[in-house]
Image (tube, rainbow, N blue to C red; front, side, top):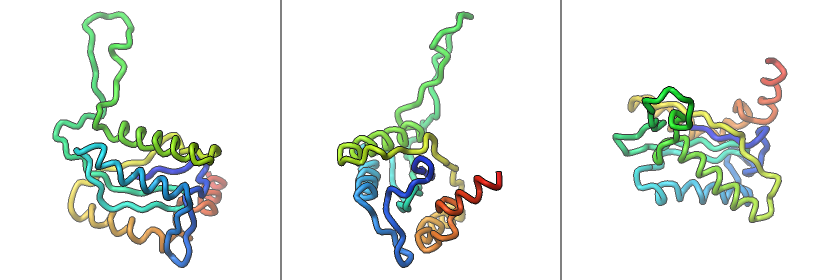
Length: 163
């Protein structure tokens, strides 16, 4: 999954000689990311990297009953909140939402009140070992390829102009 900062602002640090140098905000994000599996025993962290304006990570959710939504379906025909889907406690959306919330709180407490996340995140399901290894390699090599990364602020501006 990939989580970006609002407007791809480089809050998390800089790439110097192909290596990520974390800012104070980046350090907070790294610390909170590492707590994810401690807080949620069903979540295992795999490869991850913090980039200047986004974080890439592989989360393994070890729960055979993971659902994205839980629905309480009513037999009544009236419109009510019973049919509104609610996130399950181990859903990826809830995990990422809580992570972003805790990070924001810690970052704001540290005095960086201008920090904001992009409202959504990108995820994909990794279905086999070959794909897993390809994504791991991408994550590990991401800092060295920062100049050509689609999330690099210069490249992102070009993409926005072309659309």
